Length: 464
View 1 (cartoon, rainbow, N blue to C red):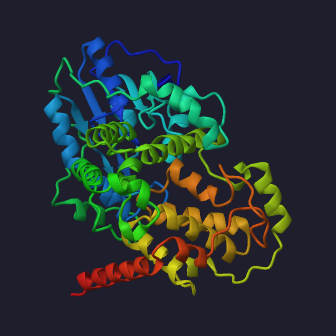
View 2: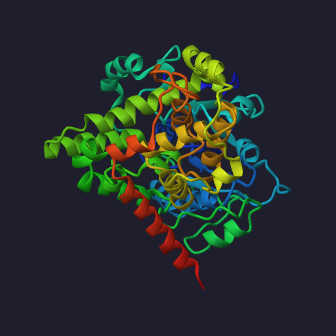
């Protein structure tokens, strides 16, 4: 269920290597697709080549996203070299540059193995490329602990998918087999490879034809070492507090792992195994964290797989569509233009802080993101405008955006994976959140002060 061939082409017998195309799972460890590629290479007695590209043409390409990806490249290369696996990283800087690196590399490949992924550009690639590649094209799910293909239909709530996941967990919650290749990579470096070092990331980003107005996140470093450090910090200092304080942003009890999960620099499988081991060792109960990591996250992937790669309000449950239709003409208390929302120009101090956190850190605390989204619904002229605003902000600024989990979280603000609540203006029976309610449940003022302090420090650092 984890492996699917997406075309009818045969494995090429006269080949130089097996090619693994890392689209979304940009890591060496705990990668089912890379492990499968290594087994195939060993069976064919060929070396293995790891191909990880970056282009200037993906939607909302900018300095923030490019930097996070590039920061991981030097270490990925070192770890692959230690295993005897080849590595090629083409950086397409300008739209006029050739866009055929994959096809050039595939000419000498016995097969192309890639990541199974239901959203963003990877979903489009896996739809379009197999018929054009001229060789066996195989997709492997290394994003979910329980493979997406284990579910034959769309699940409509956590309560329906949870027992199915728990039934399948014992056979899937196991570490990925350690990679050993029989034939080490000894070929010359590919002509399409771009050398990336810790010192040249900034200059490479500056040379790319992308949006240079979205700055990198200085407080979150991309790459495997940074991801492992973040995980260790969570296990040591936050896991014991997670269930009690996860909805209190000022407590800093959440993992902070979402950017690394999105870019595939960590896997949910290795996080789950590490959390379970830590909880057993320290006699902690980690059920609430594992519920979010496994059940809720994989419910989002299930939604994306069956609903399609492009999120849409039309994918909402019937009750949500009906209540929006009924309340579409309700008078909004305030209406803000999208550019005002993007620039955090509202009269709500908590909402301003959440949007500033997105600017500064490329993410919003999960609990406050619910409030952030529902206020956009309240302030937008239509539900479609509200949805488009949320998606565009995440696609452009979030380090954990462009992801099934993010798209499902946005649609949850409109009723996805939820149920009807008491009816009110604008929202109808969609769940509502108020500022007074947030103040009763969390230390809102502390959060606002913290974001303002971080903003001031950032401005000082940028002052010549």
